[in-house]
Image 1 (cartoon, helix red, strand yellow):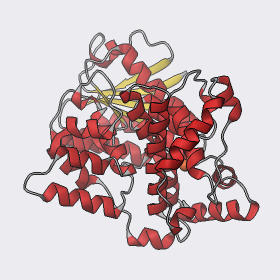
Image 2 (tube, helix red, strand yellow):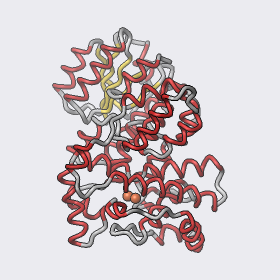
Image 3 (cartoon, protein in one colour):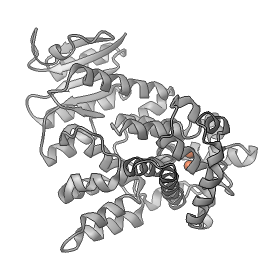
Image 4 (tube, helix red, strand yellow):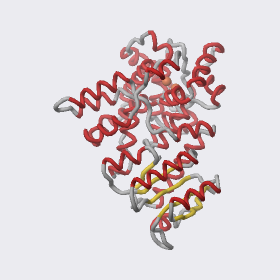
Length: 402
Ligand SMILES: [Fe+2]
Ligand SMILES: [Fe+2]
């Protein structure tokens, strides 16, 4: 049975979070009223899977509490219950909280959020990697794209459409706008999967706050990673997104599904950014091993990290509350059969787009023919391949290293 700690100053026998948990059977809740009590309980028992806080007093103290939990118990999932809040508070919560749920959420919504967060944590079994990933609150952005965005924001009348287009070219910015727009802040019933739509919902003020919270790949990082080229990875990511969208359209998917395939393609290799920036020496070692032993990069990663960038990226996006279809496509893009999906979906498009994008590169990505066969799509492959070939942007020298 999983254990969850509730910090709720106002809980009583019938009210608040206790009421929420009344019919949840698979979770054992423990209730406390103060941050001190909560930290003592967590320190005394490493078995807590999640912490849920229902902040009553100030956002600052609630966020400070979660930041302390993050520091002391990084593997514990952190959820905050809050209603519509202001811009500044929103940004404050983004780092310390993995998920935000509305106070009026249902029992099943809370249970679902807890289960999914823990299922994702279990996807990544390497504990030290879990610690690293659960402390990441933004990915580094590409300097050129970032500069372009700042420039547009500084014009007299920045265009939301243009900003959406710029964001859709950057892995880090796209991941961030989707995280925010899908958090409880906007109270949207449906999940937003496209960066352009997310930008429209967020509005310019929120984009400005987010831009300030994002890091940029620094010169320093580039020097530590001689074999890793952020530019090449971004080109590969963007191209995979565009291929995935084209494949989805060829399969007569709705515009919304095609956009979702684009986003999933853009984000599919984000785990590489996490590994390359958090564990650069090991990442270099995996790249060297791939070349020396002629392994796929995923095989080399398994040797070095015990897991791959696919699980790492999915774990991060799952914690951030990105839509399931995207998390699933990221998690299984190298082994689609494990997702147990029986229809064409974003995962199918990304799996194929990625393999096509890798053709002729040092790093190979295999097509899973059995998977396509089971979906009765194997004979479509040549059509997809030809359509994507027409769209290919020739990779520069660096792209070989992505
Ligand atoms: Fe990959
Ligand atoms: Fe890839």
